[in-house]
Amino acid sequence: MTHRIKYNLWLFLLLAFGLFLPKTAFASSEEHKGEINVSEFVLEHLADSYEWHITTWGNHHVSIPLPVIVKGETSGWHIFSSERIKEAAKEGKDYQGFFFSPQHHNKVYERLPNGEVVKPWDISITKNVIEIWLVVIILLTIFLTCARWYKKHDSVRQEAPKGFVGMMEMLVMAIHDDVIKSSIGEKLYRRYAPYLLTVFFFIFTNNLLGLIPIFPGGANVTGNINITLFLAVGTMLMVNLFGNKEYWKEILWPNVPLWLKIPPVMPVIEIFGIFTKPFALMIRLFANMMAGHAIILSFTFVIFMTWQISTTMGSIFTVFSSLLMIFLNCLELLVAFLQAYVFTLLSSVFIGLSLPEHHED
Amino acid sequence: MNLPSILTPDFGLLFWMLVAFVALFLLLAKFGFPAITNAVEARKNFIDESLQNARAANEKLAGIQAESEKVLREAREKQAEILKEAAETRNAIVAEAKSQAAEEGAKLLAEAKKQIQVEKANALLDIRSQVADISMQVAEKLMGRELEKSEAQTSYINDILDDVERK
Image 1 (cartoon, chains in turn yellow, blue):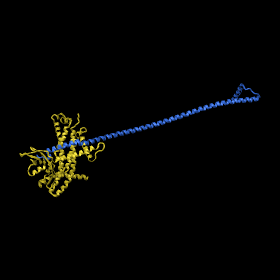
Image 2 (cartoon, chains in turn red, cyan):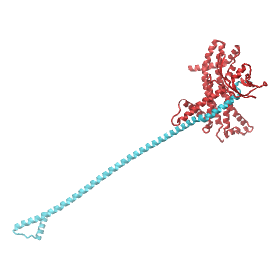
Image 3 (cartoon, chains in turn cyan, yellow):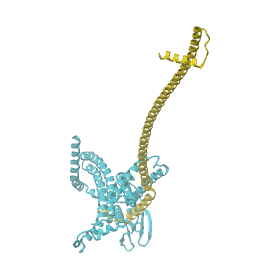
């Protein structure tokens, strides 16, 4: 009973904060120096970046500058540290014609000799790119280690793995059997299993790393629309490239009365559906991960903001925010798994739907 | 116009995502996941097979047990039968022996009787001749002269003896 009351109290507090904090935040920031803005702060921390900000000590920013790789309009490819542009900007100059454009999320832009500003081909190794490669390295290490264990042991007749390999086996088989096999069907799931497992573990690892607030975690990879777009397009290709004849028949010539097909109402809706499914996948993962990061960042921000109002307010909100952040981090831990699971599950279901059995009625 | 940067398409990020993800996918699809999933599936099949074998072995064992019981029961039945037959045979032999013995005994007895009869007859004949001799000697003494020992007299005496015997 007391647990229930406590839980309700937490829920109430959470809702109260959610409703009332942003307003006070804006109000206070405008009242005081008018220089900190919640949404700017949060979006800045969610955004990709040319440097990896680790901490700020007094007025000194401690961050790792990352390489910028751009192709100038006439000058070809350039590789240099993002520090170069920053240094040049301090003197009010461009570095080899490149500068961070404040109108375009501080992306690297090129100022041509005639004064025209253009976007160069930009394949810089940004914070998100580093995080992605980190995930790649982590996953390769984990699974190649596991694979080596299987090669060295007779796991079929002699022993099942224990410890870490056993845990990974359990996780892999849970996704493999309960999600992929049961959604796609016994017959054809093998073809898709490696892709879907890769998707699951890629998203899951990224989500988990995103929850670690210090280097080398904390990058908002799965909360970036580019990443979820890529993954959703991957699923769309899997669905539509390997869909069978029956799937295309159901889209282009479904089993409905003729008047629904001759002005092609149903086919148009179905074709629209080809795109809405991955779109929903893209938005779901993006919004969930972004929102989680944003909420945690907001509660962090509230601490600093309230300290500017008064010491008492600051102390009270420090305690409240800390408690809430512990709760939210636990929740995000669940969400990290859940969103990876849901993305994989829905991808499997869509793939399963693209392989209907031929039926006559 | 300005969407947040996390909502803005970014060619560089997409490019690296493509490279990293495809590399990860190819490596894991070739060397990572199949090792695990194949091993687990092989293990699952092995366990299924083992269970099936165990079931078959159990069934076989049960069959063998039933068979051995049957054999045992049959052996016991046969044993009882043999014992019964043996008893019968024994009884028959004993009975035959008994009857044979009785027969033999009877035969012996009859023979003995016959012998006795013959002996008796011989004895009687002997006695008769002696009685005839004695009677003749008695009659000689009585008549004081020697009687001729003739056939006629002997048969006469025999007739007398027969008479005596008959009386």
